[in-house]
Image (cartoon, rainbow, N blue to C red; front, side):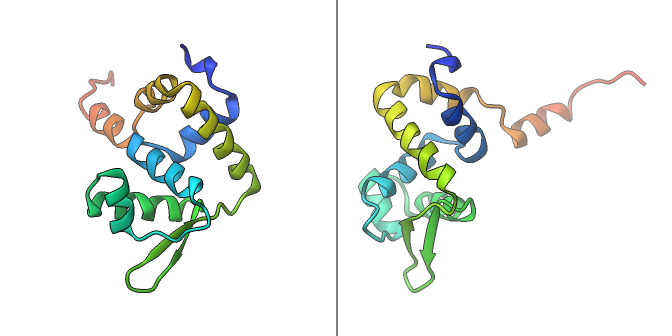
Length: 128
């Protein structure tokens, strides 16, 4: 399937907020159990990723306004998007990921990565 197989709202949300499958999985886990607060260790255990990676993904999603964080010790995170538009986008994304997982994964991996592109651009020869 092509990128066009994904709804525009989903593509836009992925471009703006999701740069890895791991981050997507963290977001969808917390959305699926929105009534619960999660520590990084609990997310790591559930998704079988490292605590450090879970903590980084949770921090990124919180900074994007998709999760809220209780700054206690340990920090606890909960699904709570600030923007209602994001709630709708994430609902469509969850459905697309359930129905067209390969299309979503392909889209994420085909997105230009700014830091990688910046590094590659440093080696371009330019005419003066």
